[in-house]
Image (cartoon, rainbow, N blue to C red):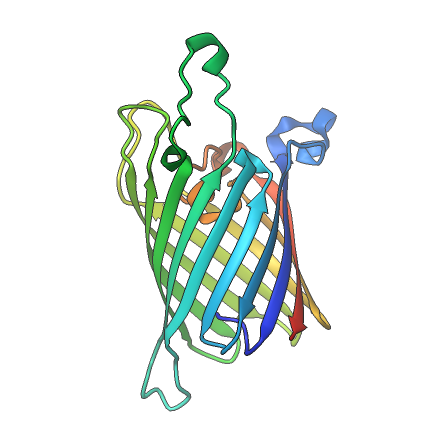
Length: 242
């Protein structure tokens, strides 16, 4: 979706630690946590721009989103197609610089990564929508010399409204390539409940991904549902008409 005309959306996203850290860590509530603050705006209801900052990797992100096609009620256009492109910049310091004498972030371009998506969606009934999106992720710098800089994934997502103000959502992303030889990464999967409360939308979800931004959770999910490496998260969205 793209925001309506002259609409500003302020978002707060939060993810706790893993459930399998046990009772001492209150099953992840004690952290570590990841927090993102974001602003998204659309002037014409078709083109949208957004910016944000995440605590994990001290990451700044910006994105552009354009609604190319819109599904019609008479099915003359059976699907909606939206284009998405984003860029990310980490402000982390190289922890090994003092011992190696080499700063892996010497060049600012080494701090950057990018994500592009073609999002195809269809609303099958007034209650059920389904989405398919091929995803391309590129990192200018990877941690291991054997890792690939380019990653390709397929994301599927669905939304089912159970009442006027409550909906159940889910997303699964499949890694097409094995882009790391020495590290194991898992496919990202999450399920959530959306609750609309006037001008706010409150979302509660469970996911095996710690990262919130697309460049983090799509390729670099290190936890698995199989060993309860999942975490609770929530998002709060507040919309303003300008």
